[in-house]
Length: 387
Image (cartoon, rainbow, N blue to C red; front, side):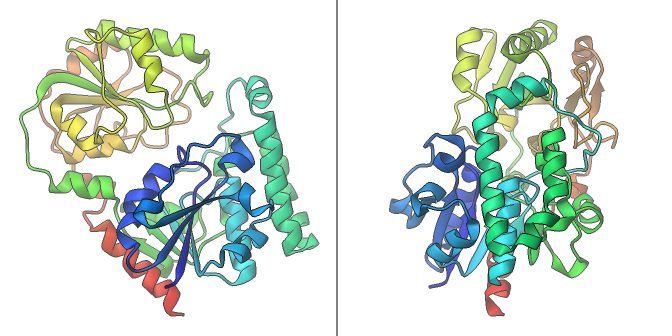
């Protein structure tokens, strides 16, 4: 069978997203999950998936920091990435192109251009993440030096901007690396992938996403009168300042201003235990990590959040959505309220106005194709491996 190498930096960075997509394909392909948990981050969260027929490989176990050598060792027939703006994904696509290995880019969430966005607490973040940053540069440079000195020299502009502004780690110079095909989520993403990601129209595959596919298929359900906060690690990622103390104050502000009980579905990269330790069950219902986001939304009458793609799930499920704007919203890449698909919450007291709305007529098709994502993925892999 052909070997499909699916890359994610860490289980908490896209690994949980990859499993439901590729688990059904183990009868057709050898699936290898390649990650950099020990090599870059120093932790070991990725589970053993051998019982599912999926091999998990940490780059460290391959005894190299070069993705050129890594792809040769795992004998990849096709490679898959989820965000080619990340340094590791960029390096992998450079290596795949050099080795003439077909590549697939699956859009994992909403993306946008953030040229002017600067990371908050830059010095603190640099100190906290110094080792990870140095290891990441080592991986990128080792890969490019295996390709050739000219490739490394060409990358210096990107690497300099990365040092000057950590947000460049994700969003800038995206046009320099492209996969052979790109699976996109919705209509609004086409223009970005053509204009900013440098894909051609024939390279784009309308895919939607599994979480949206399930939402489209769900039957209407009478909810509890409760507000679901769809959270994100904004304080942890230094997009909002103040650290965990400021986060605690922010959540407390929501709880005290809301006219209905609050529930929260923590982001996979958030520490669920932190919520349990800082808030009482009577004031904040914390959904378990394995709770399906669509089910959580269905159980609540309203949803609020920042720019998470899960807010699109709420639109599909006809829940009124409020966008929190009383924090620094400079990094919002999904603006459902300015698109008139959601309501603007300029201050905590605006939560009361949101309660007057009991459903939404917003059309979610602009944000998420109503497609079978599994079929789109199978067809894309078959097309890549046919050549």
